[in-house]
Image 1: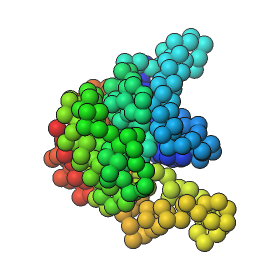
Image 2: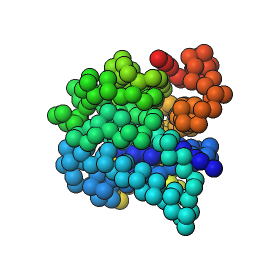
Image 3: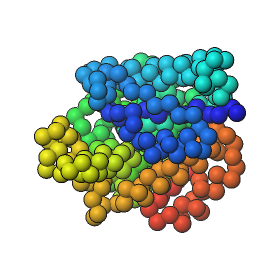
Length: 284
């Protein structure tokens, strides 16, 4: 039962359960999913300077691939003989999307990992000049040469209402990933940066516990207030629809690229995208 391995990389100072809907969906389709916490750049252990955090990201993913490969080869391990070591993908959101791209392009001094055969950067910064924050420097984006060095299939995913990481990042990458054998650019019309994470789950959990939004800053959840408003309230793009579309496209892409399941190719066509009012798809 050789199953492909998917490593998921969380956002800047985030948590490794930030996209559990996607990870559970991938697991239900037969992928083995490993989602590390990036020590030094997670909610539980923040504090690494930006460049140090960037420099550690790709090596973190390589370490996880090493560990899962060891487990696959250990006859006494629960994962013994389970993994298809030839088919490893990296999926990530935001800073984790940069991590996914870095495993194929190299990033912040780390070399690409040749075991990674497909990547899905979601809402990732490609060009530091497009970034909405003050961060700058060589690790705040990717050069044309780095993008041109990517030789694995890539699916770019993002939301058109993302104010943290503008969707133009994905358009730029689509044009500059010239050596990739397949590039897909999935734009979800109306989605924000946090439509691809679990902010609604966390917000609803607090509300269910009787902790209303006004009290969130008092319990250390001030950072959740604005994302909840732009992601989870009735007047914005429905979170359930964002989750469905993210799951549909990421699963279809990885089934096609890692497993060779031809029937999933239908969901990756512009013809199918025309049936999804919120989806704009470019393929090459």
